[in-house]
Amino acid sequence: MTMSARILFIDRDGTLIEEPDDYQVDAVEKIRLVEGVIPSLLELARHGFRFVMVSNQDGLGTDAFPQAHFDLCHDHALRLFTSQGISFDEIFICPHLPDDQCECHKPRTGLLTKYLAANDIDLTASAVIGDRETDMQLAERIGVRGLLVNVDAENALTWPAIVDLLCHSDRVATIERNTNETRITTSVNLDTADKIKVDTGIGFYDHMLEQIAKHGGFSLALHCDGDLEIDEHHTVEDTAICLGSALRKALGNKLGIGRYGFFLPMDESEAKVALDLSGRAAFEFSGTFPRDSVGELSTEMVEHFFRSLADSLGAALHVEVKGENTHHMIEACFKAVGRSLRQAIRTDGTDLPSTKGTLS
Image 1: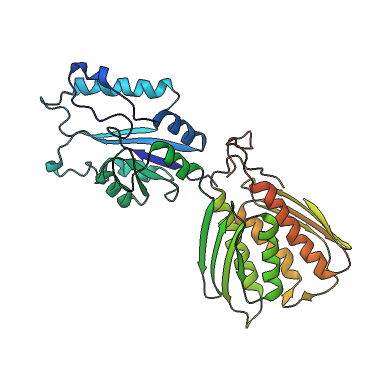
Image 2: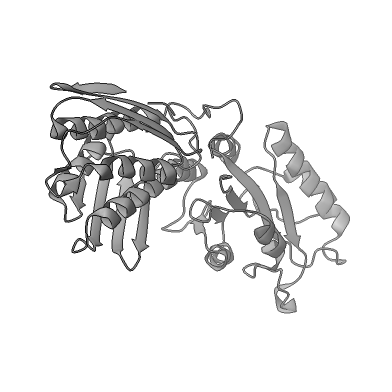
């Protein structure tokens, strides 16, 4: 599974370069970059963002706005960015006047129609960045957030502030799953551990999910209304799928993660867990429980939970447990998986821990 691209659709004049007074022959000498844009784009690129320039140039190619004059300024601006190691996947420029009512003039989306169709874009992580309301309207029309920059407005940001917002905010995700058997909402925050609330209707299972979050060092809110009048199977399986999906979504592009995770004893029991957030699902389980159930949770569902978690998380997960007390054995498994996740999801820098260049 390939990771969806995180794209920043960026306006040009007033956003990347200071708004030009005109495009006369000597205008190239007046090109100035917006304050903070170079280090900010470099940081955004290190965090896996790609850039697409989208610009209205009203009347370009007319006698009042000669193409040759614009090209001199535009090429000079691109050379400034290229010299600093910044490139754009695509550059889209609309030359039409607003009164032309063309489908390419922002906030209309015609310039981007083919690009959006041809690329797998993570809309929740992507954004339009610009200095005008038309940029914010464009963001709404293509389904990404809009970030206002370099203007005197209450909700406007500086370029460094955009970096903080996009690169250093908490890694969060919410997954909802509704079927004829279960209705589930799961939310995680990988960068705080101040809230853990689980309600599946299975007391011992709730306690085990709390162990994963507590020892994993992340916040978890999970609620499930399941068909417990039949048995616990659908509730356990579907919550495992939701939890794994939420963790995978919150991890994003996985830049800087530890990737690997831990074994621990619990009284007479011992659980060994090997974890790899590789993006490829694989699962191995070794252990025999002395009892058939603990509370309302059948022990056969323990292995099934971890298999479903590995599949939806896209992880290689190996669990081995031994002991005499079934309660201790199961709890050791959940705690050890939590501790493995704690190591694997923690970030340090922006390097991707893979020589392949992807963990998807």
